[in-house]
Length: 397
Figure 1 (cartoon, one colour):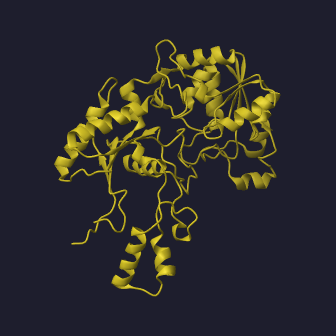
Figure 2: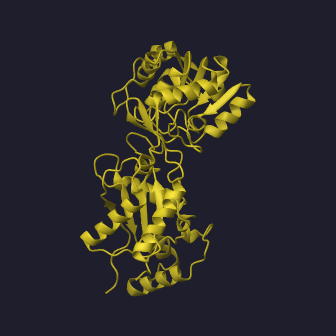
Figure 3: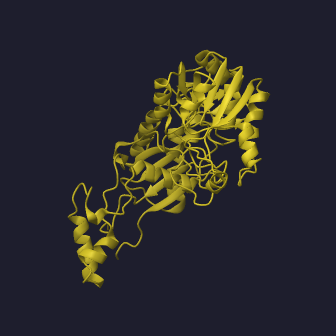
């Protein structure tokens, strides 16, 4: 009988992961137990993906507010610090801000507008148009912002992030001044020591600030890159990708993720005899059309993966073939012609009209987004995702 199922994605339940756990063994145990329970078989090129959260937990990769404060004070000299382009997130940035503020005497908080980098909106574009404000050129003080727009709360959380972040700084014992701008260099009218908190544009911000005369320029990826008083750390990403653990502690993005990926791949191969791909995934990269958030608050979707997950899809657009090359065919003749095209497709279809409309993204970004949507961020209890048949196509039997 002809095969009727393509890609299958399963959320795999696992024990609650604690610091020091052998996560590679736990993940393999969980996948194999699920296979036995549900009656499916593991195959070559299946994908086992593990969320970055449990990898970091197993590593005990945590830092405290005081750890952050000590690192910020040492690296930014403890005076007036410009903190620019933070995302609007109680989970992602609020605890970071507490630590930053504890390491400074004054924080000049510069918020991008109308939205942050990942799509959380302070304002609507319509509100800017109504007031005649050009966010690419206009720098607003807090007084000007309030006079123009009043108190604006986030539609999903009900939080006035301007006041929320300001109060965090005050509670940490620092003075706060808030401005609104989208040119990173605007902060230099207030201070020459800058911590730029953007994620995906941080290198450009650093470059522009240094060229414009900033004295100290650091990013979130430069804070907590080594242990402070025995804390966790991430030598590559620092505070980027961190999440709130408690009111005083953050879980960092996992470090040495490739070591874990390789260990799990070896464990699975030893126990199944199959060559199974493995990856660590964080935030997916997709946009919510209603809330306008595009999700990717982590520095990358996947910090580590096996070699078989490198590259991009190389796919033909079946509807293009059906509507163009084989428009005069139908039924079995059409099926046969399309299958022949897939069998004989070039190794690199870049530039081919027959591949136009296929998703031009890296495999790890696509698969990681799929995994993030499957596992969710709440109480599903499935920090491990098994993807089967991802590399199959219409001719796979």
